[in-house]
Image (cartoon, rainbow, N blue to C red):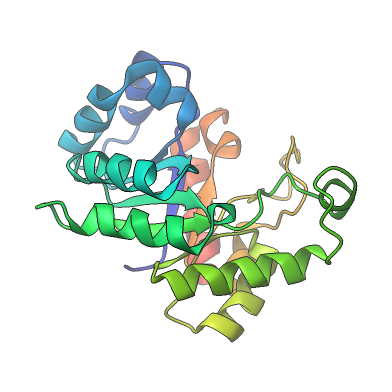
Amino acid sequence: MQKDLIIALDFPNGQKTLEFLDLFKNEKPFVKIGMELFYSEGVSIVKEIKKRGHKIFLDLKLHDIPNTVKSAMRVLADLEIDMVNVHSAGGILMMKAALEGLTSSKSTRPVLIAVTQLTSTSQEMLTNELLIDAPINATILHYAKNVKSAGLDGVVCSPLEARIIKDVCGENFLTITPGIRLKSSAKDDQVRITTPAQAGKIGSDFIVVGRPITQAENPTDVYTKCLNEFLNG
């Protein structure tokens, strides 16, 4: 897959989502459907957005016992989505089961990636709340190695870790990076963030941008600006 920007459709319902997508008259941006929208509208919103010609990253972060994840992935594959994810903390057996579920479908297999650490995770949280004493970068890199060992296509990570992950896991190992903000944007609840241009230089394959685009006065202009900065530095 070519480098691209994925818009996070963080809307509470299908109506607001489709009204937003209607703003894009001449483009069909790659989009991310997360838990809020999916739990609100179900598979119908996936099918409608797919029918409109958009590529879809279905961001549900599956994390359960291997057999449950395998069965769930078999169902999701039939939606003809382009990308889907799990939590790498579920372990190698769970990730392998997710891949088996996707490949058992008659549909073309979507890209399967795994979350290393959420971009809201700090070293303090990792140490004090999760009782993980290792440095956060070491933890993320170890999780990425597990993801590659399981046969998945790549990881969701902060753009700050994209380069070290590629150095260890290979240039073809995909890095999908949220935590992207323009210089003029607020950090919100993100901790480990960069600009689109910085992410492109570091080595991100896909950047995920939500609020800086969806809450902008002119979303299409901000989308174009972010995409150009990412691709051209």
